[in-house]
Amino acid sequence: QAGKSFVTVRLVKGDAPPVEVDVELATGDLLAVRVQELIDGAGTMPKTMTFESWQDFDGLRLPLRGASDDLTNGRIVAETTGLEAQVTFP
Image 1 (cartoon, rainbow, N blue to C red):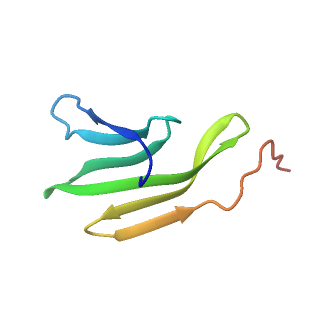
Image 2 (image 1 turned 120 degrees about the vertical axis):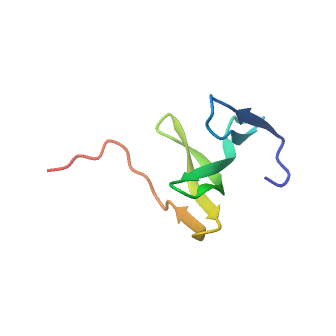
Image 3 (image 1 turned 180 degrees about the vertical axis):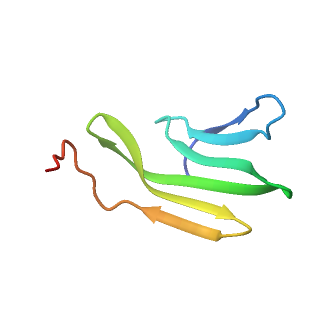
């Protein structure tokens, strides 16, 4: 998020743990999500997900790279190398 202007929004509903999202002001892109993941019998665990390399694709704006960080799994990165629209299958 370095160099980007963003706002942090805290989302709350009932007794569920709050969710914080960072939204880039210029584009509306979702930059990060911070949650307290519910673990059966153990309470909660903090998790952060980040999104980057947003591109317009067939009228829809999508992130091509995302990462998830938590204490159990460490950092997991998923990167999309290409997208195709209107693909037909036999």
